[in-house]
Length: 525
Ligand code: FAD
Image (cartoon, rainbow, N blue to C red; front, side, top):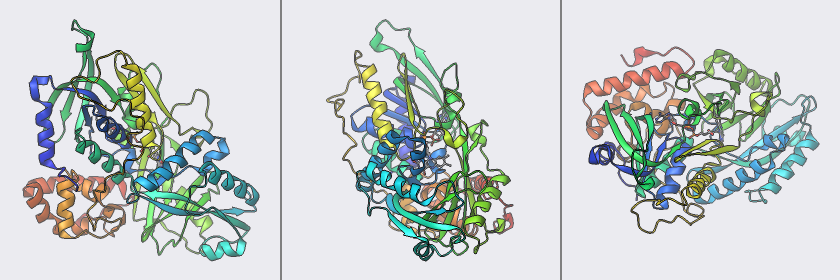
């Protein structure tokens, strides 16, 4: 049964942090509550380490709620001969199908081949044989090659001019926010303290102690919600800050080359597809997707170098045009217009800075990178949503290797430090309320209460964007539900009218930035 994870949990966690006047100690303090930090917290706490995870926004607020929501091997990486990455990714995909069936669902893809395209039909067939082979054939059904006629039966909206045929294969879809939260809830249930809206401000090494085993990092953090400062101690600090890495990690060279990726959402009636369709953009020949999403369709993504501050990431109007152009080319019978765009989202890929000129943004590897820095800091960056569990395992192994000669962890009985496979066979907790679906509808009353009580909702934005998909899919992006939600938020979260109005104002700011068109504020005034 899912346990409470709400304002009261947060207050208890804060109390534990302020114990001993700044001397509360943790084996690991993790900076960043995206999928990477969440998975490290889960793995570490399941091994018995004393863990604190801090996230300056909502959990999954960064890249981990802004992905294409695919658990995939990455067919396109085969073009770059990244067989190791594909093998690791398809192995994790198979594991997640088994361990998190409520979060990771098989999704069929159709990859059409055109006479004018750089990837012709025989190449696609060969590529997909290799893809299924690397997966050791652990797929719902092996890929199938279709001739032109069968392809248009499969996807009637698809452009038929110059179409040679297609290959149908399987990957998976997920809800990136929910899989992040699932890791965090498992960690919290195993004893970790996970606190959102807590900004880590500094990490200093306290070496003023006689015994090496008494030396700790002093961490200072600021509670954004309650405007309070905190100070505590950590044996090891894990930097899992995704695109924020270079703002926090001390290094002479930037670790990352961040690239921006954006998506648009339209009603499925405007762009009806049965399978996810792989598109090669007619302008720059990049791979992107049209993805069915219940009663909606996603088109994305772009891939543009973006060195702006990660807090400020924003989709440009040119990106909407670029995505519409791909849709127009492949689905000429269903011409999409800007007005059809219901919502958008944009995120920064925390990609590793290449050692030499990488060419285009899409050519940069999606491998992850681990780095240990004495005394006791570890950086984990790069990687993919798909490989989060492996990234976490590698992080813990790196820490254990480098702390072999320490008394680590301190004061704990029988930690499972040697266990290689602590998360290999452990199912992901299913914390979802029964009517909490990927839809434009409000869950029913009891389920809204369950979400507020068990999923650490601290703002309306958390509810609309990362606990439900209402922001993306409802005709007015959730504003139509504000009046019905008000009394429930006031009752369950103990808010007053002013607190609700403040949260609504913040949500309106979020909408103005993310729906790609002016907000009709009159509906809530
Ligand atoms: P983030 O999710 O960004 O988490 C870092 C967190 O650190 C942030 O929430 C931030 O608020 C927090 N933080 C920063 N500074 C501080 C501080 N001082 N104190 C406290 N907290 C702090 N991968 C896939 O496998 N499949 C896909 O389909 C896919 N599609 C993608 C599409 C796009 C457009 C993008 C951008 C990425 C995609 N990825 C995909 C990659 C994947 O989403 C990322 O690799 C992954 O989400 C990165 O997670 P993270 O935890 O490392 O970073």
